[in-house]
Image 1 (tube, one colour):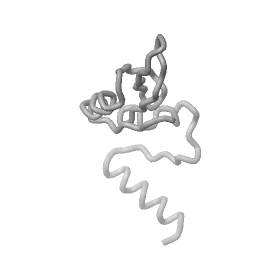
Image 2 (cartoon, rainbow, N blue to C red):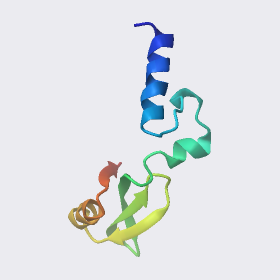
Image 3 (cartoon, rainbow, N blue to C red):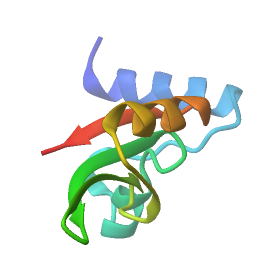
Image 4 (cartoon, helix red, strand yellow):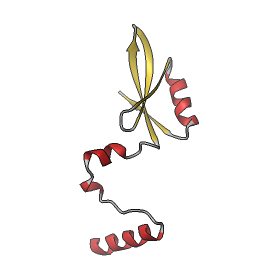
Length: 88
């Protein structure tokens, strides 16, 4: 199947499901930041007032919460039916 055929088939499938087709190679910065916002949360080790903590951020970088350990951070993310990602 040629690329043009694949594109047309993808458009037909997307149209059947009522979704918009977007070429990921041409996303704007704001569209790229919005990818996964409702599905992904990042955990980053931070130091607050000299104490180790774990910050939880949405995929677009929006701060969501701070916990005292990574296990609690992951549990909180999973409880919200999101996927946790560790940032180094």
